[in-house]
Amino acid sequence: MGNLASYALRRLLLGAAQVVAVATLVFALTEALPGDAAVVLAGDIPDEERIAQLRNALELDRPAAERWAGWLAGLARGDLGVSLLSGRPVSGVLADGLPPTLVLAGLTLLLLVPISVGAGVIAAVRQGGRLDRALTTVTVGLYSIPEFALGVVLVAVFAVRLGWFPPTAVGAPPNLLQQPALLVLPLAVLLARPVCSISRLVRAGMIDALASGYVAHARRLGLSHRRVLLTHALPNALAPGAQQLARTTDWLLGGVIVVESVFVIPGLGTLLNDSVAARDIPVVQALCVLFAATTVVVNLAADLAAYRLAPRAFA
Image (cartoon, rainbow, N blue to C red; front, side, top):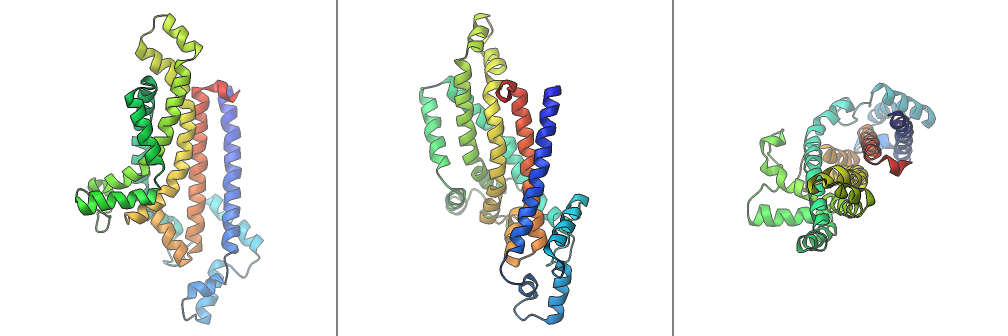
Protein backbone atom coordinates (compact mmCIF):
# COMPACT_ATOMS: atom_id res chain seq x y z
CA MET A 1 0.00 0.00 0.00
CA GLY A 2 2.90 2.33 0.84
CA ASN A 3 4.49 1.71 -2.55
CA LEU A 4 1.19 2.41 -4.28
CA ALA A 5 0.74 5.69 -2.36
CA SER A 6 4.30 6.77 -3.21
CA TYR A 7 3.79 5.89 -6.88
CA ALA A 8 0.45 7.77 -6.93
CA LEU A 9 2.05 10.88 -5.39
CA ARG A 10 4.86 10.90 -7.96
CA ARG A 11 2.40 10.50 -10.83
CA LEU A 12 0.13 13.22 -9.38
CA LEU A 13 3.00 15.72 -9.15
CA LEU A 14 4.07 14.83 -12.69
CA GLY A 15 0.49 15.25 -13.90
CA ALA A 16 0.21 18.70 -12.29
CA ALA A 17 3.43 19.76 -14.01
CA GLN A 18 2.08 18.46 -17.33
CA VAL A 19 -1.13 20.47 -16.98
CA VAL A 20 0.87 23.65 -16.26
CA ALA A 21 3.08 22.92 -19.28
CA VAL A 22 0.06 22.40 -21.55
CA ALA A 23 -1.58 25.59 -20.24
CA THR A 24 1.63 27.49 -20.98
CA LEU A 25 1.83 26.00 -24.47
CA VAL A 26 -1.81 26.86 -25.18
CA PHE A 27 -1.22 30.44 -24.05
CA ALA A 28 1.88 30.70 -26.24
CA LEU A 29 0.06 29.31 -29.29
CA THR A 30 -2.86 31.71 -28.91
CA GLU A 31 -0.34 34.54 -28.55
CA ALA A 32 1.31 33.43 -31.79
CA LEU A 33 -1.91 33.63 -33.82
CA PRO A 34 -1.39 36.05 -36.72
CA GLY A 35 -2.98 39.49 -36.65
CA ASP A 36 -4.46 41.55 -33.85
CA ALA A 37 -7.06 39.51 -31.99
CA ALA A 38 -9.01 42.64 -31.04
CA VAL A 39 -9.26 43.74 -34.68
CA VAL A 40 -10.35 40.26 -35.80
CA LEU A 41 -13.02 40.05 -33.11
CA ALA A 42 -14.29 43.57 -33.86
CA GLY A 43 -15.83 42.42 -37.13
CA ASP A 44 -15.58 43.30 -40.78
CA ILE A 45 -15.96 47.04 -40.08
CA PRO A 46 -13.92 47.54 -36.93
CA ASP A 47 -14.81 50.45 -34.68
CA GLU A 48 -11.96 52.04 -32.72
CA GLU A 49 -13.98 52.10 -29.51
CA ARG A 50 -14.91 48.42 -29.93
CA ILE A 51 -11.26 47.54 -30.61
CA ALA A 52 -10.19 49.40 -27.48
CA GLN A 53 -12.79 47.55 -25.41
CA LEU A 54 -11.62 44.22 -26.74
CA ARG A 55 -7.97 45.05 -26.15
CA ASN A 56 -8.85 45.95 -22.58
CA ALA A 57 -10.87 42.72 -22.13
CA LEU A 58 -8.01 40.65 -23.55
CA GLU A 59 -5.48 42.70 -21.56
CA LEU A 60 -3.41 43.06 -24.70
CA ASP A 61 -1.90 46.28 -23.37
CA ARG A 62 -0.08 44.28 -20.66
CA PRO A 63 3.16 42.32 -21.25
CA ALA A 64 2.60 38.70 -22.28
CA ALA A 65 4.43 37.37 -19.21
CA GLU A 66 2.09 39.27 -16.87
CA ARG A 67 -0.98 38.05 -18.73
CA TRP A 68 0.34 34.47 -18.61
CA ALA A 69 0.93 34.66 -14.87
CA GLY A 70 -2.47 36.22 -14.27
CA TRP A 71 -4.19 33.59 -16.42
CA LEU A 72 -2.50 30.72 -14.56
CA ALA A 73 -3.45 32.30 -11.24
CA GLY A 74 -7.04 32.53 -12.44
CA LEU A 75 -7.00 28.88 -13.48
CA ALA A 76 -5.77 27.91 -10.01
CA ARG A 77 -8.77 29.77 -8.54
CA GLY A 78 -11.17 28.19 -11.01
CA ASP A 79 -11.61 31.45 -12.94
CA LEU A 80 -11.67 30.56 -16.64
CA GLY A 81 -12.38 34.07 -17.84
CA VAL A 82 -15.24 35.50 -19.91
CA SER A 83 -16.34 34.52 -23.39
CA LEU A 84 -15.64 37.28 -25.90
CA LEU A 85 -18.68 36.35 -28.00
CA SER A 86 -21.42 35.93 -25.42
CA GLY A 87 -19.96 37.88 -22.51
CA ARG A 88 -20.78 34.96 -20.22
CA PRO A 89 -18.33 33.29 -17.85
CA VAL A 90 -16.43 30.58 -19.70
CA SER A 91 -17.33 28.08 -16.99
CA GLY A 92 -21.01 28.56 -17.83
CA VAL A 93 -20.35 28.15 -21.56
CA LEU A 94 -18.50 24.90 -20.89
CA ALA A 95 -21.25 23.69 -18.57
CA ASP A 96 -23.78 24.07 -21.40
CA GLY A 97 -21.75 21.91 -23.78
CA LEU A 98 -20.60 19.36 -21.21
CA PRO A 99 -23.70 17.10 -20.84
CA PRO A 100 -23.82 15.76 -24.46
CA THR A 101 -20.07 15.10 -24.41
CA LEU A 102 -20.28 13.37 -21.03
CA VAL A 103 -23.12 11.17 -22.30
CA LEU A 104 -21.14 10.13 -25.38
CA ALA A 105 -17.84 9.60 -23.56
CA GLY A 106 -19.44 7.91 -20.55
CA LEU A 107 -21.49 5.45 -22.59
CA THR A 108 -18.48 4.72 -24.81
CA LEU A 109 -16.29 3.83 -21.83
CA LEU A 110 -19.13 1.91 -20.18
CA LEU A 111 -19.57 -0.29 -23.25
CA LEU A 112 -15.91 -0.38 -24.25
CA VAL A 113 -14.59 -2.32 -21.26
CA PRO A 114 -16.91 -5.35 -21.32
CA ILE A 115 -16.96 -5.60 -25.12
CA SER A 116 -13.20 -5.35 -25.64
CA VAL A 117 -12.25 -7.51 -22.65
CA GLY A 118 -14.84 -10.12 -23.55
CA ALA A 119 -13.74 -10.24 -27.19
CA GLY A 120 -10.07 -10.47 -26.20
CA VAL A 121 -10.64 -13.28 -23.69
CA ILE A 122 -12.81 -15.28 -26.11
CA ALA A 123 -10.25 -14.90 -28.91
CA ALA A 124 -7.44 -16.01 -26.59
CA VAL A 125 -9.33 -19.05 -25.29
CA ARG A 126 -10.20 -20.01 -28.90
CA GLN A 127 -6.71 -19.16 -30.20
CA GLY A 128 -6.29 -20.23 -33.80
CA GLY A 129 -9.94 -21.23 -34.18
CA ARG A 130 -12.54 -19.83 -36.53
CA LEU A 131 -13.90 -17.40 -33.97
CA ASP A 132 -10.42 -16.07 -33.25
CA ARG A 133 -9.70 -15.61 -36.95
CA ALA A 134 -13.07 -13.92 -37.50
CA LEU A 135 -12.52 -11.49 -34.62
CA THR A 136 -9.02 -10.72 -35.87
CA THR A 137 -10.29 -10.00 -39.38
CA VAL A 138 -13.08 -7.72 -38.12
CA THR A 139 -10.84 -5.80 -35.72
CA VAL A 140 -8.12 -5.20 -38.30
CA GLY A 141 -10.69 -4.04 -40.85
CA LEU A 142 -12.49 -1.68 -38.49
CA TYR A 143 -9.28 -0.22 -37.11
CA SER A 144 -8.18 0.83 -40.59
CA ILE A 145 -11.26 3.00 -41.20
CA PRO A 146 -11.00 6.68 -40.08
CA GLU A 147 -13.73 7.84 -37.72
CA PHE A 148 -15.03 10.52 -40.08
CA ALA A 149 -15.34 8.07 -42.98
CA LEU A 150 -17.02 5.44 -40.81
CA GLY A 151 -19.49 8.02 -39.51
CA VAL A 152 -20.42 9.14 -43.02
CA VAL A 153 -20.88 5.52 -44.18
CA LEU A 154 -23.06 4.63 -41.20
CA VAL A 155 -25.23 7.71 -41.73
CA ALA A 156 -25.59 6.96 -45.45
CA VAL A 157 -26.56 3.31 -44.88
CA PHE A 158 -28.45 3.15 -41.60
CA ALA A 159 -29.93 6.66 -41.41
CA VAL A 160 -30.51 7.78 -45.00
CA ARG A 161 -31.02 4.52 -46.89
CA LEU A 162 -32.60 2.27 -44.25
CA GLY A 163 -34.03 4.98 -42.00
CA TRP A 164 -33.32 3.03 -38.83
CA PHE A 165 -31.68 5.86 -36.88
CA PRO A 166 -31.72 9.68 -36.94
CA PRO A 167 -28.90 11.09 -39.11
CA THR A 168 -28.14 14.08 -36.84
CA ALA A 169 -29.06 15.57 -33.47
CA VAL A 170 -30.75 18.60 -35.03
CA GLY A 171 -34.04 19.13 -33.19
CA ALA A 172 -33.17 16.54 -30.54
CA PRO A 173 -33.99 17.19 -26.85
CA PRO A 174 -31.20 18.64 -24.67
CA ASN A 175 -30.92 15.33 -22.84
CA LEU A 176 -29.73 12.88 -25.50
CA LEU A 177 -30.76 9.94 -23.30
CA GLN A 178 -34.38 10.84 -24.01
CA GLN A 179 -33.79 9.75 -27.63
CA PRO A 180 -31.57 6.63 -27.40
CA ALA A 181 -31.79 5.90 -31.14
CA LEU A 182 -29.80 9.08 -31.76
CA LEU A 183 -26.85 7.67 -29.83
CA VAL A 184 -26.49 4.37 -31.69
CA LEU A 185 -24.49 5.57 -34.68
CA PRO A 186 -22.21 7.99 -32.76
CA LEU A 187 -21.43 5.27 -30.22
CA ALA A 188 -20.68 2.78 -32.98
CA VAL A 189 -18.13 5.19 -34.45
CA LEU A 190 -16.54 5.94 -31.08
CA LEU A 191 -16.33 2.27 -30.11
CA ALA A 192 -15.00 0.85 -33.37
CA ARG A 193 -11.27 1.58 -33.11
CA PRO A 194 -10.73 1.33 -29.33
CA VAL A 195 -12.54 -2.03 -29.16
CA CYS A 196 -10.17 -3.31 -31.83
CA SER A 197 -6.99 -2.11 -30.12
CA ILE A 198 -7.89 -3.09 -26.55
CA SER A 199 -9.29 -6.49 -27.47
CA ARG A 200 -6.08 -7.32 -29.35
CA LEU A 201 -4.00 -6.33 -26.31
CA VAL A 202 -6.18 -8.37 -23.97
CA ARG A 203 -5.96 -11.34 -26.33
CA ALA A 204 -2.15 -11.16 -26.44
CA GLY A 205 -1.96 -10.73 -22.66
CA MET A 206 -4.30 -13.66 -22.06
CA ILE A 207 -2.31 -15.93 -24.38
CA ASP A 208 0.90 -15.07 -22.51
CA ALA A 209 -0.78 -15.52 -19.14
CA LEU A 210 -2.31 -18.88 -20.06
CA ALA A 211 1.14 -20.12 -21.11
CA SER A 212 2.80 -18.90 -17.90
CA GLY A 213 4.13 -21.02 -15.08
CA TYR A 214 1.77 -19.67 -12.41
CA VAL A 215 -1.28 -20.61 -14.49
CA ALA A 216 0.16 -24.08 -15.07
CA HIS A 217 0.71 -24.39 -11.31
CA ALA A 218 -2.87 -23.29 -10.63
CA ARG A 219 -4.11 -25.99 -12.99
CA ARG A 220 -1.97 -28.61 -11.25
CA LEU A 221 -3.63 -27.63 -7.98
CA GLY A 222 -6.95 -28.68 -9.49
CA LEU A 223 -8.52 -25.22 -9.78
CA SER A 224 -11.44 -24.94 -12.18
CA HIS A 225 -10.88 -23.56 -15.67
CA ARG A 226 -13.13 -20.57 -14.92
CA ARG A 227 -11.21 -19.71 -11.75
CA VAL A 228 -7.87 -20.01 -13.51
CA LEU A 229 -9.05 -17.65 -16.23
CA LEU A 230 -10.68 -15.00 -14.03
CA THR A 231 -8.45 -15.10 -10.95
CA HIS A 232 -4.97 -15.89 -12.26
CA ALA A 233 -4.75 -15.10 -15.98
CA LEU A 234 -7.13 -12.17 -16.49
CA PRO A 235 -5.64 -9.68 -13.95
CA ASN A 236 -2.21 -9.91 -15.59
CA ALA A 237 -3.73 -9.66 -19.06
CA LEU A 238 -5.69 -6.54 -18.08
CA ALA A 239 -2.66 -4.48 -17.03
CA PRO A 240 -1.63 -3.44 -20.58
CA GLY A 241 -5.31 -3.11 -21.49
CA ALA A 242 -5.84 -0.63 -18.65
CA GLN A 243 -3.03 1.56 -19.91
CA GLN A 244 -4.34 1.32 -23.46
CA LEU A 245 -7.74 2.39 -22.10
CA ALA A 246 -6.11 5.60 -20.88
CA ARG A 247 -4.60 6.21 -24.31
CA THR A 248 -8.01 5.46 -25.78
CA THR A 249 -9.50 8.18 -23.59
CA ASP A 250 -6.93 10.58 -25.01
CA TRP A 251 -8.09 9.57 -28.47
CA LEU A 252 -11.73 9.77 -27.36
CA LEU A 253 -11.39 13.50 -26.72
CA GLY A 254 -10.46 13.99 -30.36
CA GLY A 255 -12.94 11.39 -31.56
CA VAL A 256 -15.79 13.16 -29.79
CA ILE A 257 -14.94 16.34 -31.70
CA VAL A 258 -15.20 14.47 -35.02
CA VAL A 259 -18.37 12.60 -34.05
CA GLU A 260 -20.10 15.72 -32.75
CA SER A 261 -19.28 17.47 -36.01
CA VAL A 262 -20.60 14.61 -38.17
CA PHE A 263 -23.81 14.12 -36.18
CA VAL A 264 -24.29 17.82 -35.25
CA ILE A 265 -24.27 17.14 -31.50
CA PRO A 266 -23.96 20.36 -29.43
CA GLY A 267 -21.17 19.23 -27.08
CA LEU A 268 -17.68 20.42 -26.21
CA GLY A 269 -16.30 19.29 -29.57
CA THR A 270 -18.74 21.48 -31.46
CA LEU A 271 -18.06 24.31 -29.00
CA LEU A 272 -14.32 24.02 -29.69
CA ASN A 273 -14.83 24.16 -33.46
CA ASP A 274 -17.12 27.18 -33.17
CA SER A 275 -14.80 28.98 -30.74
CA VAL A 276 -11.76 28.48 -32.96
CA ALA A 277 -13.68 29.76 -35.98
CA ALA A 278 -14.91 32.81 -34.02
CA ARG A 279 -11.53 33.29 -32.27
CA ASP A 280 -13.11 33.21 -28.83
CA ILE A 281 -9.70 32.81 -27.19
CA PRO A 282 -10.76 32.38 -23.54
CA VAL A 283 -13.08 29.50 -24.47
CA VAL A 284 -10.42 27.85 -26.67
CA GLN A 285 -7.84 28.13 -23.88
CA ALA A 286 -10.23 26.74 -21.27
CA LEU A 287 -11.20 23.78 -23.46
CA CYS A 288 -7.58 22.90 -24.19
CA VAL A 289 -6.71 22.99 -20.48
CA LEU A 290 -9.82 20.94 -19.65
CA PHE A 291 -8.86 18.29 -22.20
CA ALA A 292 -5.28 18.23 -20.89
CA ALA A 293 -6.39 17.88 -17.27
CA THR A 294 -8.80 15.09 -18.24
CA THR A 295 -6.01 13.26 -20.05
CA VAL A 296 -3.70 13.52 -17.04
CA VAL A 297 -6.35 12.30 -14.59
CA VAL A 298 -7.37 9.37 -16.78
CA ASN A 299 -3.76 8.32 -17.37
CA LEU A 300 -3.11 8.51 -13.64
CA ALA A 301 -6.12 6.32 -12.91
CA ALA A 302 -5.06 3.81 -15.57
CA ASP A 303 -1.47 3.65 -14.28
CA LEU A 304 -2.71 3.08 -10.74
CA ALA A 305 -5.03 0.33 -11.96
CA ALA A 306 -2.19 -1.30 -13.91
CA TYR A 307 0.11 -1.00 -10.87
CA ARG A 308 -2.52 -2.63 -8.69
CA LEU A 309 -3.13 -5.45 -11.19
CA ALA A 310 0.51 -6.20 -11.99
CA PRO A 311 2.91 -4.46 -9.60
CA ARG A 312 5.83 -6.55 -10.87
CA ALA A 313 5.70 -4.70 -14.18
CA PHE A 314 6.55 -1.41 -12.40
CA ALA A 315 9.37 -2.81 -10.25
